[in-house]
Image (cartoon, rainbow, N blue to C red; front, side, top):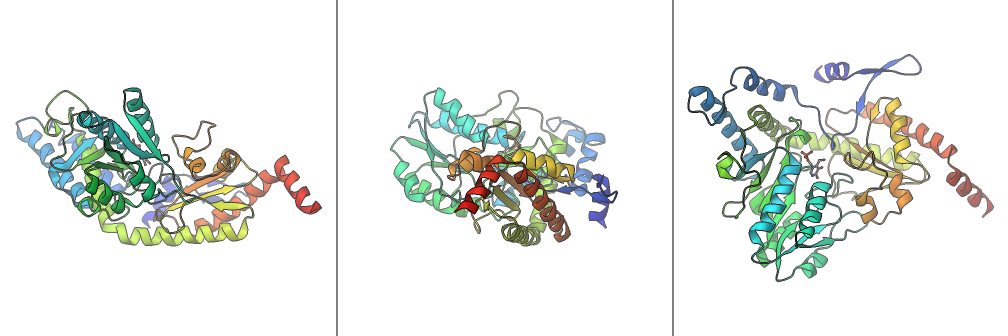
Length: 414
Ligand code: PLP
């Protein structure tokens, strides 16, 4: 019932045949729908409980209590202590803060940082910024599936290495990195370890102590929470300067009046994600593998990007030879299907995805990529529609492609 209502609300599409079908949303790695119960939890903090949490009267105390309850729920997702969670404006701020403050705080020990070639731009561009300020960054390669090589990581460690930052799960191809092994190595060498867990937080089990993680970034809008709110986990005892200077909020580490409704929404989304994690992942995995199986069986000259098993439950990413991902997206959009080529941040630019290039794809193969990221609200019927529309769109685009024509001629000649 709830799913049916959602589909009506999110816009029905009139098909060419005149038949009405609802939109199929397959871009959950870009952002998710804020869950109705999350919105409901947030509303009183706009309208009634609007007090500033720093105020001394009881209206302020209500806000403060709600912020701390959310902090407790969010800490619970990763087995952290409440006081180790610092609210930020999202994943980008958490990544910036983690890298800049860790680098600055440890610069007296060394100026070398290790990360990977496939990080989100929130990490890569922060690294570029740090390089301009005298830090040296090693960018680890990945294999054809997007996994780093632990031996290469160990070989990259130097006496002046102060920070390792490796993402938990890649936002484009869904590959999961060996976080526990990296954490153990970082511990052994006495190096601080940050992971950008924006795509994994609330989706997969994460225990920071077991994994040896010192700093972790997360963002609410990837788990059916609101946009513009995220957090940085900072292990107790880790020395971190503040990123935003001003008031004394967040124990002097992140100034600015707390985004109380956002924080409450993040807390509600975290609790919801914990309740649903196992069932949601199982539904997504089944839909994912069904979609992958049908595409591989029914569309020639395609390649699955990312790791087949070590992969986010809802991630499907393919390259289709001889076509442009952007054209495919537009054709799918006309059929009411929302997907993405590469990451949302990179779309709009004509540069091929740095992630796909790092996995060894050629420029033209990287250009022909399509990411579809599922949620537990998707259905098998939707997957069937997507496969049919995709088959038609790929065939149509290939028919217009001189490269495809040449290729077909060459196969006929040989
Ligand atoms: N890191 C990763 C892996 C992401 O996927 C994203 C968002 O796409 C971010 C960081 C940035 O998060 P936010 O949109 O909350 O700033």
